[in-house]
Amino acid sequence: MRTSAIASCWPATQSLDLVQAPIEAAANAVEKELRRFLGAEQIEGLWLTASSIDQAIKSCEEFTNVPTCFFVLPTKSRWSVLWNNSWLCDGYDSLCHGLTTNHGLTTLHWSAHDQDTTFQSGAAFSYRACVNGAVTERSVYCGRQDTGWTFYEGGVPLPEEDIQVYEARRKRDRLNERVLLSLIERLGAQPWNEAFYDLPSQKCYVLRRASYPSTITRRRPSEVFVAA
Image (tube, rainbow, N blue to C red; front, top):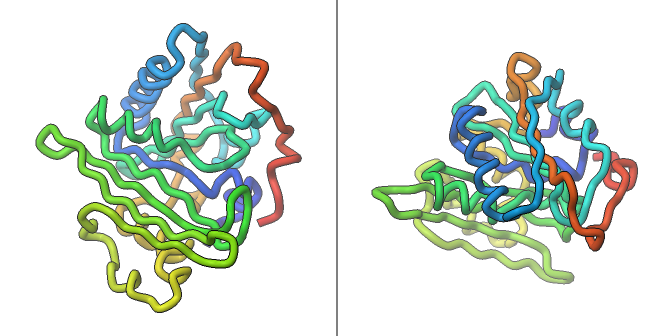
């Protein structure tokens, strides 16, 4: 299901959040949200040419326990992809929430990994959209909790969802890599397919925290990437 470029960066690619906007609009909104989050902290932004999704991710020289480097990646669709360098590899849900709440952009925060990685195996998504001035949210979660599995859903199902799969006897079969990526594809995105990205035709936008607290812990890429 994952193409080689995605697999080479695993598990840093287990969450590739989506925002429904062209790259320029997405980059502008992301920068505004980060400046709102971080206040007076200095942030540096630049447009970067990358030949592929894995080259873009691997241009990040360190990983941190909280995000300090943020990428907005162009695609050949109505979506842009968000990635950050947290070694937890769990996306950035509050950023997606802010992009919808403060900028009216439809977002999809998601992660999927059928095997244990930085977290126990599971899959989840939160789809947010602004409808008539109000934020609507649809969330589904399925994850292993030590010896058992937990399944949760909230909000009105999306037309693209196959809600019958949520009736599977085994909770772990209700939402997994295959089910979630099929839903994302029906929403018009293929974030685990390197051909989905419009690179190098378009540049990606990179935002870096120029000076962050010493309490933030760091890891080398070699300590994060594993064979998928």
